[in-house]
Image (cartoon, rainbow, N blue to C red):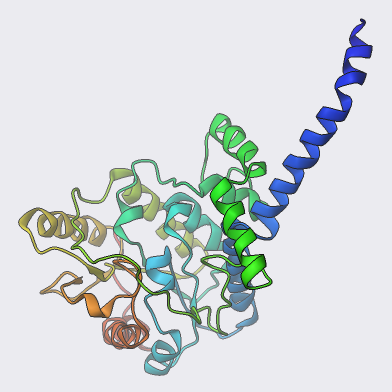
Length: 319
């Protein structure tokens, strides 16, 4: 049997495999999979930022430790400038989160980066959703993902997991629609409209190492990018439910010292933003209950006022 004949015989299988992969890709990226909901949330937030034409705005970004921890309306009320929540998802990775929002920055903007330790400790700035997020948002390779890794992980976007498909099937049966962690809509400032409940028991989070050198380099470059756009970068330690053991405290203090060398850093000086009351938190060690988001927002207002004041001296930056 000649090569062409063999290929013709295999054609139905190849077509079926291609169709299955395409359907999987559509599910993962465009509608149904967790990545699709994250993409939609990101696009909604960027659209909100584009619609806000004030001469000075506060743009807040980071992972879900930014998305689920602030009340933008309360911050806006306290500072008197429009505030947009551009927080995304930690597994997207710092090296992808930062360039994904830089185009939203305009002259006069204040950019507040609140990175949770999940992304501060990453040795290469990438996470489980780095490749997928770049592909889904039309910027494959965003964040400097190596070509081999990009090809391998992009191929897997056409292969939904059994767990994801099972969940989606149950959604269709029980709810009549597909849902996901980020499928709930955001409000007109980019804040979440639903608070997720915690399903497991609480335990105190420990921080086993300080911020990585790569994260510091990424944030330093981000400061340059923000300033090139005419904006100002300010950093904040995240609130988290954690341990006050010596190792955690030492690593958090070291992280604060290193971040402060890059840009102005705000945090509660006595606690380093380590919280010991689990009732403040929702489903994770970083996500806050609605009432705690208001407390956090009011704290941020007081910490940000010196930089936001119309005639305030601009924060000192570091080379």
